[in-house]
Amino acid sequence: MTIDPTHPVPPQFQRVAGIDNVPLHVPKELVRSAGITFAPDFLAAPYDFMASMHDDFPPIFYDVTPFQNMWTLIRHEDVQFMLRHPEYFSNEGATPFPRDPEDYFYFIPIEIDPPDHRKYRAILDPVFSPQGVRQLEEKIRKLANDLIDECLEKGECEFTTAYGRPLPVSVFLDLMGLPQERRDTFVDWACELLHSNDPQIMARTLESIGSYLKEVIEEKRQNPDDRVISRIVHADFGDRPIHPKEVFGFVIFLFIGGLDTVFATMNNIWLWLANNPDRRQEIISEPDNIANQVEELLRVFAVTFSGRMVREDIEMHGVKMKRGDRITACLPAANYDPTVFPNPRKVDFHRPRKPILAFAGGVHSCMGAHLARLEIKIAMQEWLRRIPEFSVKPDKQISYRPGGVVGPDTLPLVW
Image 1 (cartoon, rainbow, N blue to C red):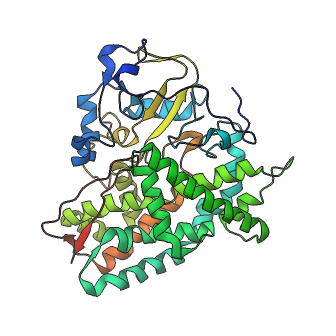
Image 2: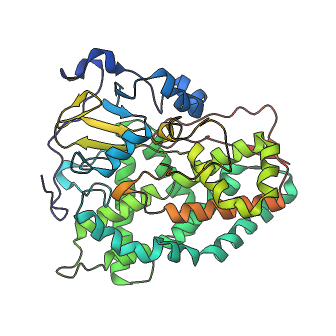
Image 3: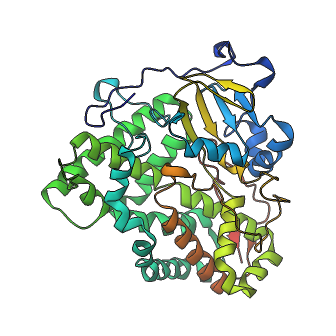
C-alpha cells in the first residue's frame, strides 16, 4: 500500500497486546513474555539480559507484553534481513506514540518506506554527513571542556546532568535552531514520552511537544535561518514544496529522536569506564585507536530497538509471519550474537571490524550516526584527558529506566 505523507491516515492494522490476543498462526512454543525494556529482571541488568537472550530464547519468538505483542528477532543475520528488506517489513506505523486520528501525521522519515524515504533524508544530508559533522568538532570539544570546567574542582558530579546530557543535547539544539534555555524542559518531555509506558502520559506529552513545535515552525517560516528546522520548513522537492504535514512530522520526529539516545549511550559507557579502571588506562594509552574503541563500546551498549509491520506473509527459518503482524529487532541482542562477535560480552578494542547495529541499518539507519560517533569520541578524549581516575559514588545504587531507550537513570561519579 502506498501512503501519501501530505494526507496521512492512521494505519488500518491494529496493535494487539496481552496473552489473549496471540494470533492463531503463532505456535505456542514460540510465545514468550520476555519483559524487554520494563520487567524487573531486565532492568536489574539489561545488557546481561540481552546478551543471555541467545541462550535463553529462540532466535525468533513472539513476545507478549501489556503494551504490544510482536515477533522479536535477536540474531544479527535476521535483524539485518528485516532492516534491509522494506518490501517485506514496512515502517508504516512503526513508532508506538499515540496520535490524534483526527489530526494524524507520519513520523518522517522513519515511517516512510522507499523510494520516498530518501528524498526526506536528502534535505539534511549536508548537516549530518561525515563532512557536515566534522565542521562541529571544534565546537563540541570546547563545550566538553566548558562542562568539565564546571565540575572538575568539585571532585564529583551527577554525570547525567553535568556532562552526559548537556553535551549531546546542547549540540543538537544548536543544530535544530532551538533555545538552549529550554533544554531541561525538552529532555523532560522526551523522557515522559519514551519512558512512561503510559498511553495517557505519552499522548499528553506528545500534544505539548506538538503545540510548541508548531509555533517554532511558524516562526521559522517567517524568519528563515540555516538550522535544521528552517531547512525542513523551506524544503522543496523540485516538483513541489514540502507540505505542512510533512514538515511537522519531520520536525517532531527529529526532536524526539535527538534528545535521549546519545546521552543514554554515554551514561552506559561512563558507568562501564568507572567500573573498569584498567580498561580506561588501555583507552588512554592507545589514543590512535579511538575510532575502534568508540565502535566497540557502541556495539556493547546499543540503546534502542527497531520495529516494523509485516507487509506480506513471509517465512523465516520455518517461522511463518502474517501480514499485519508487528515485529521488532532487538538491536542490543543482535550486537551480542556469538556467531558474528566471538566472546561477545568481552569489550575488545581490537576486534575485527564487522557491522554493528547500534544505529539500525538499511535505508532507515540512524541519520545522526556520524554525529553521535563524533560526540562520543570527543567526550571520551576530553574527559579521560582531564579526569582519568573516577568511580561510581560509594553506596549509590544504579537503576535503569523502563522504556525504549536503555540507560541508567542517574550516574553519580567521584574522583
